[in-house]
Image 1: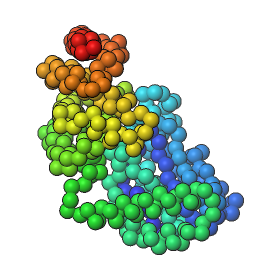
Image 2: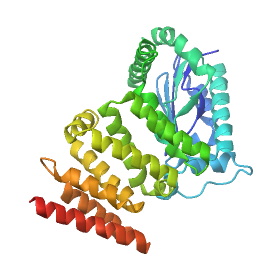
Image 3: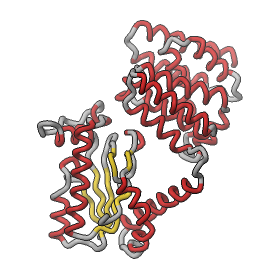
Image 4: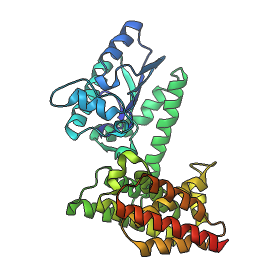
Length: 356
């Protein structure tokens, strides 16, 4: 291993791809120009230097850029749209891009020695299948951080903080070895929602992901999982995922377990740290999407049970849920779904009025 690359492996990317590199010294103007000129095409034009630190980031919609540059026949990328900005590149193109990125890092190291490189895992895209290079890099990270201690600039300082946090997380994971891993359980669920399919293997993976959450059984983890499911439904470029039956079944199982076993207070407490100003907004998102999933699947009993549960809360979110369902109703076109959502809105409004 010539230098540490934390995050090395088969990475997937959601809206953007980004990478940070800290060189052992600031490159000359000519060296910097050669390094940037050699960047893989999807990252061209997104380089920012701060002394020895280089931040590289793609444009929005990196999936379309990767597919265009590394498809069977390279071509110009399609224009950015609301729909394709969240596109995930096909597996072959991803492998070629990741290999090209590693080639670029090694060539850059030959020009100016690299102290450490870091690529964050993109959880929304399913993260990174980490390689041996990553594992070796973690072992070498304390030494790299010591070497980078005097590197000037805000970029280098921010990278040191991020890598120290990464190292602390690894040490905490080793200390927790043999105990349930909340992040692993959440990651297993995220991966399932990236590309759910109707085959038995995918159904089994979704069931295993939900079972992993049960093993951990922490309120904050359940609520984060529920919010992730809600985001997958609410983000309209990926709504096709929730129309997939295994995906719907997994989301419904997460919603059911979360909402029946844990309280609104648990939810606000879980969301407070991540979003101090809007924990109730996140809670409402989970509730309204959970209702829509039940109604979309024709599970009127599940929707009724959920609405009754909400009616019993001290500060009922029923009116807000009804508003969210009404927004979905305005976008719906299938007659059967329109009828279900209309019934859900009417029920929520009536339940809120009766409670008042």
